[in-house]
Image (cartoon, rainbow, N blue to C red; front, top):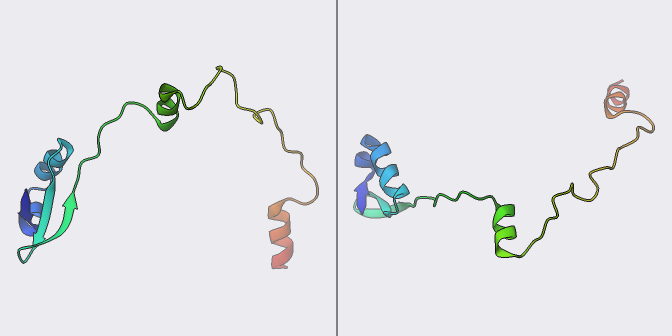
Length: 87
């Protein structure tokens, strides 16, 4: 569906809904297509959930490796170094 920029601006939400439903909306300026509005498909799963569902990744339900690592403070803090550098 081709639509002029003025028409698109006047009825923005209407054309966005049409794009979300799967219709390709092409914006025109001086009768030339200058942009295309394409809806993003609604997915209920995140990237990790899709990997698990596809069998590409596995998870045993625990925390990831490295989650127990704690950082120890050594030397000066960053804020102290910045204050020292400023003089």
